[in-house]
Image 1: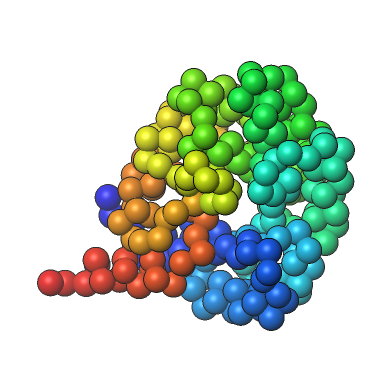
Image 2 (image 1 turned 90 degrees about the vertical axis):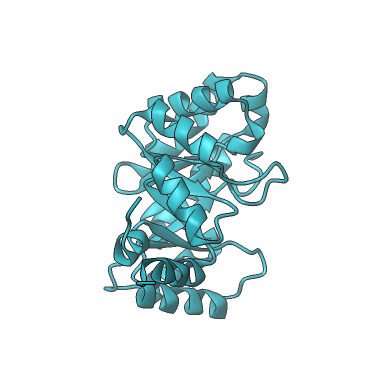
Length: 228
């Protein structure tokens, strides 16, 4: 498929979620985000305030993660973390579902925590739901996406990038996109480190990408677009 550099950049959440990342690292991330003209940065909850200050009036959004990376947090804790992130200036929140509930088929419990986060965020903050697709069966992926949609999510997202089961795959993105049918966005994240992989995810139906190697991916796209 044909995607220009600017079109690809506008689909990227430029991501830094290493637990040891400092405010200086976040400042660098934000400068890169402005230079590369990406859609958003994605940072840890403690760094939302700093990112918001760095990106003021830049047009680049600030996203953060909730219940990250395990998802094994009490519903009230996830809701409180989301509320604090919104108060600090987050435009978007990516919540990790309770994977134990998902694996045991407790979709009511999964939906309840997503709905609790949606309630504290209101409609002013975009909500993405991380389902850890590499861990789930196809049937569970479908159930997770349907649960997220019913609970008020704006996006479903493949992965944290931290789970040993793996990150995004073309098959998972295709299934997620088919399940939400354009009613929700689909974010592919985890292990996308080159332009070919990024384009494959978009071709499969991803409408947003989570990347930490953004500059390298965009540079590779430039090479692909260059006349031979």
